[in-house]
Length: 487
View 1 (cartoon, rainbow, N blue to C red):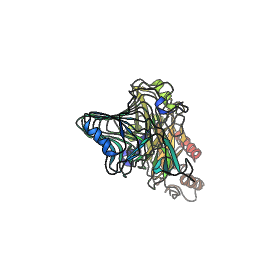
View 2: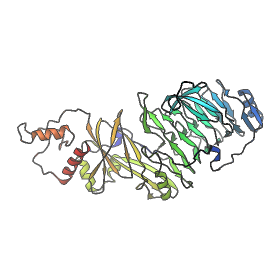
View 3: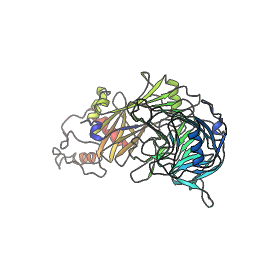
View 4: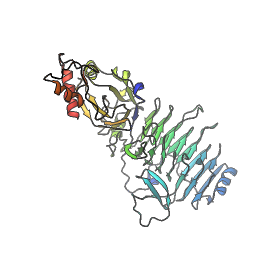
């Protein structure tokens, strides 16, 4: 019996985005210019009241920080019809409210400063706690990370750094520099409007949905749009151990993500149910109906689709083939089974409790997923057994073993191209041998059948029968051999 995913749980495709870019030691502001990044320092700001007062009394404010500002339970509001040009100037802006900056109008973020800040590491480089003023006796990379320039942060459990909410007119945020760091919620939460990311970093933030950028909408009639032209999204974590909506960039509800330049979305992880940092990347999640567009990527840009491909050759492969929108999809159960030919279907029928998976990457009707340039695609699927085998099928039916692991009822494996895959669920490790009613205990082949059953080589012709007198087909033999080789 081929199980559909509705019987097993929702299958998720984690399309993992990484990037390769040669920037040497160039500062962020030296990256190619896509928007207007020039700004002026007109209004010095060292406290919340002064900053909010400038905004409330002027249509456009060119402000720059002259000190680290703690907003307490307050947050900065940029009203509809107003523009705040904010230069962090190497300093920090932090709040203990639900968000640090609430944007209804337009916010432009710059950073001219080079002040060094030290942020304490809680887990890996992905989970950060708070700024340290003294790092003597501590080890960089182990106890803390060092960031240059200013940053925006927020302390509540489910707070946001920048919030683009549901308003009468869509808000706009342009980020040219600085850092949004160490937030126990989304760095940028979008319920409307546009976030144009030109430079800077989104780092060390945690959330269940879009730890760096949550691209969503609140029934406002227009979908949110995230445009990435540069910058880095690194070391952010999903706190959903199923990785549901868990990408550092989470694209929900038919919203759009555009990759237009040299983009680094890499080394973002998820935390399992035991609060342990797992080193499966959770770089990007695209809900059904969402779109990720690759438009005008600069030569040398790369998206790596997969955990192992840290250097990111796969985006270069996709960009070279893509023409317009790029869609990623995963089908399971009957839908995936319909993609199988007769030889593949015959092999699948011999397997125990199989889950059939079919993957595709298309651009304007063209399949571009056959060549990922050495990159990898990670597939995440809930399973009911702790002992599984995963196989890639070629067109003639033979199976090729794919390394997989099961963590908390979720199977993870990595593939190099579009294909049909089968997860065979053998049961829990250490399960008892199946007692076949048609295999006599004194039969000369009884021990061999018992061994094959116990080791997942055969599952019989039913739950209780082995059918020892039936002919063994070529598909049966191929399946037995590959199951044995996969152990």
